[in-house]
Length: 375
Image (cartoon, rainbow, N blue to C red; front, side, top):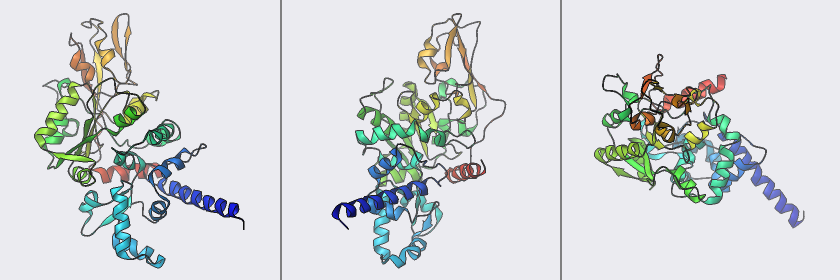
């Protein structure tokens, strides 16, 4: 065999390993579908070394104890100590689950695959490159979009109203009350840079809504995990509430993890956030995301100032005969238009049928997986 043939065989073998990893990740509750362009393989090569990819192929879709993983790989000659070290390295790179995130599963160390979004991508905060972001956006807004925004499965995040948009007489469920989500949490609390805004900065697309960057909040085990990986910092509950106020003052959309006990609360805008920018591409974004509210305009008092239109990230408001109208296919009930209306002509209305989020992150992923397999 010539040197050229040996190189070609090696490259073919490497491509095969990354393709197998793509197929393995595609079995996750939120999959990792193939593309004609091969951008998904380029993304994997940005993230995983060849040896990382080989090891990840041997990990389960749902976390397992170190001892069980070792028994499966023992015949390869790897020692338990080396396996643990390599798995911990993958956790530190943000490529698999482990550490503080899985302590609630029991004694000992657990490891498992992570979904691409929200998961592997978010763990790359502070580590992005322009080339990676170019590939990321090509994938996100094409083949991955149908996987990420599947109306048949629960979405990973939900929209809750900003505090000032809810009238005092309205009854609001705890899981729709962002302040109560923080107040009721045992902590710790963490804050990290917004990876979406970091990515847009690298692409020369600076956010037009705010200069704030530390707007991604983590709660409890997620806060510990981010802190342990050096991706964020631990803050007090009072600091968390202060940051929450600042994000609402900036007009950002509040997006907690879609669970009654969320692990994260994102503050999003319509030109940076992967959630909102993806939703905006859909003809009926309201079908894709969980939200229990929608905006309604009082036509009798609307002054036609268009303040609400400039405030709306979802392009859900328009002027008809100099009066503001809400497109209910696009309104996700964030409440930002309510806060700034000078004539108090817009208010949030609670939907007749309330959507109750899953209990926690585990139940959410299980629901996504069950409905995905049944679809």
